[in-house]
Image 1 (cartoon, rainbow, N blue to C red):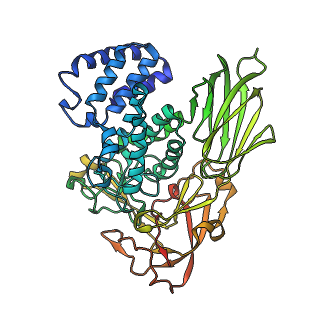
Image 2 (image 1 turned 90 degrees about the vertical axis):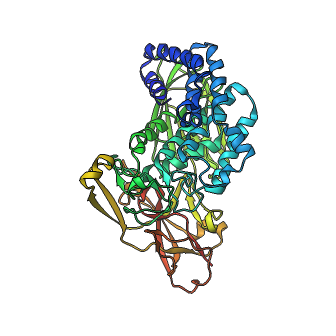
Image 3 (image 1 turned 60 degrees about the vertical axis):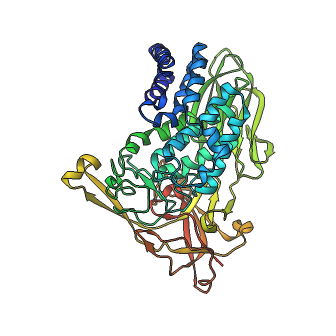
Length: 520
């Protein structure tokens, strides 16, 4: 299944016909062999990850039209783990260790993938129910869920595996292709701009096996994870093979596949932009006219996006086609400007269609005002702070210390690893405030030069800071080299003096508190 995805990527870049020939022969082999040796014949992992197999089958069918591929897809679906039943008819998302965290990230798309053939809306309902239950019973601030390695609840000190991050992004990208669901689009951006960058070092040479939403030190130590003892307590240090080596192989698909899925073809054979980042796309519209759209933006650190349109066919002076743009649900009164003139003010939470006659040099500007949103529905009624697609977390000063593995460990874990220690206090609760007036409570500081930087994702380069009043919670201390049990909204520390603290984008942190107690 992994090789199929690699070949699919390779074909999209090269159009090498050998891929089509190979896949056709391989899928015929599967159709002949699976009745006797089903997916779970050698390992149950294949049952859980059958959706990856199916999405390539359908991709090939859309190229060749070979009907045996639909027969094969039905067969693979019947042998797959029944995620539709799991999400709609069981309480598995409410209990610990019912499923491996990466199997869940990869498998959640399977009902949506199969919907293309079944046309049964229960498969889409299952996906929606699955996402809702994951958030309710296991969700964390950065868009992921406690799963270290088994599903493990919503305590913000439970681990989140890096493989789950990149695989959940890929599942969301596949679901957006099929459904155009705006919730999937926003979930994708939340993971990409919060969870993904924090778990990998700037040079992309070291990674964490697990991250924590509330992470106050990253040290070699056994924690309360579903952790195999053979990991040697290395699950949240930054290393190459530390924790488990799968993520060092898997982490590289996150950004490239996100880039590949910024732009989409629509059902009316036109063009849609559904996730935002600096990019350029060349596509055919209006029954064959080749156009290029260049996207310039500092999003998600800025709230403005600019598209410049060019017709690539020299003989064509203008072309009529609809351009679809996502208006995020978190923005109010977004504006659309064309060639400097405001043409529309729209509410968030929909895909707006701009239908007009386009000429080379036309410019579309989107403005998405970002308000501060407070969510107090997390573990122990902890509070999260979000502005636009970014979650904000306490800025904690860091000390990175490099350590060597001993000779016996180097084969398993690599040569060395980094531990990270806090150099500033972290045990703060936000002073109680009216959550409906968050924009009055927080002050926003934006560094325009850092906004224009090439790389945001560390303390030094964080372009946006939020200032807010907080109080120290003296009895919230370290436990097992983690933030101790999260205090429930409390009043006994209400008389503690207030202090102004600084929050920065979650993706810019290594150490952080992102789910805060509220001091009443």
